[in-house]
Image (cartoon, rainbow, N blue to C red; front, side):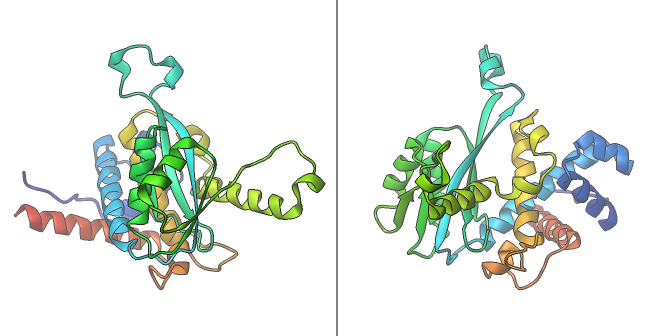
Length: 266
């Protein structure tokens, strides 16, 4: 199979990525830019693949000290309670397992799957392969998290469970507990906190499109979004890059990926 590069200009690609990052659908992007559905869809898929590959290579030997692990539940096509036949098996609940560095706010790893321990173990295996230990990991008390930590980490890190208590007064919980709970809750939201389309995207039509949207979102969050408390992007704070990235830099990543694929297909 011969890989062919897209004939879209750099300006068109940048415009498409901006609209996709704002949460616009593929058809809405096509109407706004005058491009066909297939052109936008292909650019979406290629950009997601390029961004996943770059982050997989860049996020290695990370010197994270404190990581929060959490998950976000969403659906594809149908919610699980509405899936009634085997024909609807591609549909149902999707769980996004995500890790966030408490200090740099970097998202070094995420995993899409179900809520089982198997998915959690694959997620933690990928995460720990990117870290320079020792590191402290914080999760909630979900059994899948416990199984993954026991199997993947083998006692070579510090592990703590954060239990969120609701409905108690400030005096009973203590100010320190309140601060920890607030920080963990904000970290759990991560890149979705400033995404106006998060509510709509919680129900995607296809799992593949859900995965591509996450790849674009985390790439933009890690490399292009300045954290006010750090005065830097998460990737800058973690030492992955030394400068602020723009949309044009993301387009360059896509073009480099396309050029590499074209050479490999010759």
